[in-house]
Length: 342
Image 1 (tube, rainbow, N blue to C red):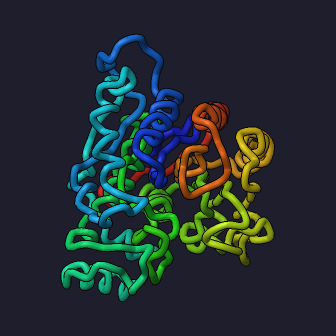
Image 2: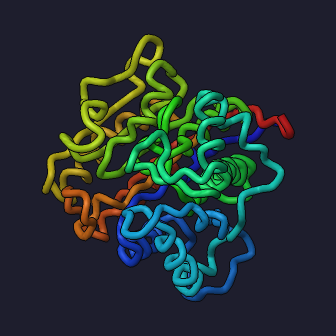
């Protein structure tokens, strides 16, 4: 089946690590920028924006006082549903029709996936002995479910059921390497979603935009040599995870030029990231002409986040979303094969 891609489509598939109340406020701003305008919470006849969520995501237990914790979503969901924008969203759980495992294995080593499952079933509390990847009995199950949520978001957008989707999921994924867990992350949700869009939906060009205080080293590692997936990242630098966020890393082999790191200095604030989005990102988007936009949306660059230092305001997230939305609306004319059940 042929579908016209009259604009690039947006999918947010990764969430950051900030305090719950700040997280909710920023999510409201971002979703409001995507969703249709309206004065009431009454559901529209056609939904523009979907939000993918499941209570399963609360079952990844990271222990007390860990920065990435279930309360982020436990606090968020009821508040978002009560917010005026909540009634204009299509709420859905990850699709049970999707088998995420083949797509996880398209990015991650089978031995690593098996080790994660075994460690969780054995009741271990740290994956590969690392304190930044705490695990619990259900972590493996939850991480698989999070990938299913990401793939559901892709399906909803590509199949035209919504214009854009936000996957409110955990654990996050942009630090997860093909062969190891890292930085709170186990499976690379955004990377797997991009590969799914490419291979299952037969798209030719997918762009991942990663805004986060930390560089998405795991996502970058998957696509360095792949010219069909453009990875763009803004992040604090120097900072965790280290040299992967260097602007000198632009891709490898056939993928040369399809990786763009725009590091930002600590304390640089809103104007620095807005300049990057208005200039560098806009130019890259127009040249690459993506058929699908995946936003790896971390909110830990916020001025109230205890771990980062970029000092972004709440308002800037809506502005960044608005820039991306405008670019998606201007892109057009592309077509892609959309085989069902493949």
